[in-house]
Image 1 (tube, helix red, strand yellow):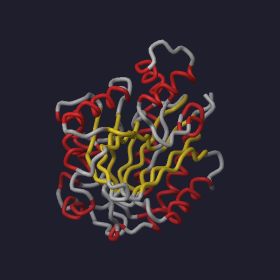
Image 2 (image 1 turned 120 degrees about the vertical axis):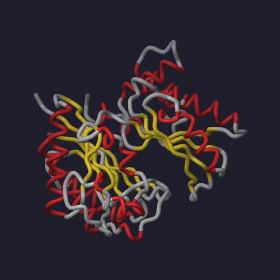
Image 3 (image 1 turned 30 degrees about the vertical axis):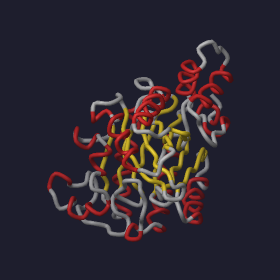
Length: 316
């Protein structure tokens, strides 16, 4: 049986298109790997690449992209609203077909060792690959960001899983792990008040007693002049996209503003859209109608079904 694994690395560069293109090219250059999506944002100053293939091929592409990014990105000059601790901020492996989470954990550890030894970048393991409960949470490792990393590395409890506890000022640190599907879901507000977005984010995230399997932050997007709630749906089977959007709509109304549109960064499993479609159009039966209802109900902008739905891109 053919094994398929997905990798969704986040790179701390969203402004220099040439740099993003070179990182993408380093993935395309690996035979047997399909580059599914490249999503860049200047305000976040981040690019998210999504690629898939066999475990060995994806491992090779992941290292190739990390090596390229380490050569081209300098964190000493980085500015952006997205929290990060390194040029190659996070590299997750996701089991897609005929692959176990255990296999993804193995790849994460092997990649972490290789990155630390060959590129001299300290590596933290997270998610299912984490060696401790504290490091399972990506936000906990990122806490304080790049600016706090040098001091963080001096603490015994933050000794890297791979590599020396030595600050690499150019590349920072890299977080590598294994996880299930995650949907990066952003919701725009018709307000430039970032405080309102932060209030909404604090109320919907699980750590504050909000929605299960939800992480969120509020940011201001200078290029658009609006505030945005940036959300990670860590398990759409627990909390669906429609649940998140409905709650943000409600909270925005309380703060005298509106949630005007949403976007999905990277790819989304078809099942997540079908579930949202059933909420917005309970009488719809066929797949196309349900997905159309989800796009309309979630007010998804710039959403190309053929390009953004993982199942269609992989031919499932």
